[in-house]
Length: 118
Image (tube, rainbow, N blue to C red; front, side):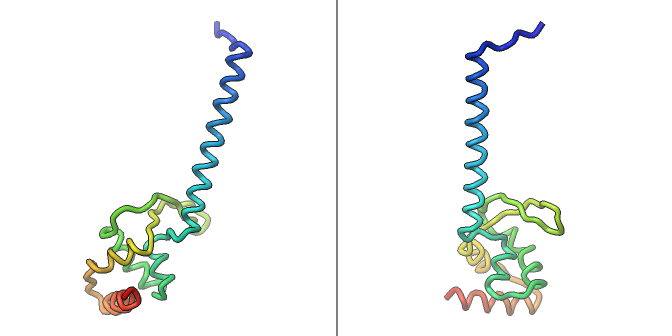
C-alpha cells in the first residue's frame, strides 16, 4: 500500500516543482535572448551579408564542418521544428578564412565576404 505524503512533504514537492518550472522558463528566455543578440545559423549569416539563398545554403553545408563551437538551437521550416547550431558572425568569418571552395560562385562569394570583413 502506497503511503500518502504528509502536508509538509507535499508543500516541499510543490515548491520543488515550482522552482524547476522557473529554471526551465529562465533557460528558454536565455536561449531566446541569445537568438536576438546576433546568433544565427551559418546560412543565416551568409544571407544577412548579402549572399543569395542558393549560394548561402550550399556554402553553409561545407562551413558547418569548419566552424568550431556554437549553441544548439532550433529553427522552424515548413511548420516542422528542426535542430540547428547557431554561431556568431565572427565564428562564420573565421571559418571562411579556411574555406577553399571549388565552385566559382562560392569562390566569388567568399572573396566578397572576406572583403567586407577587412
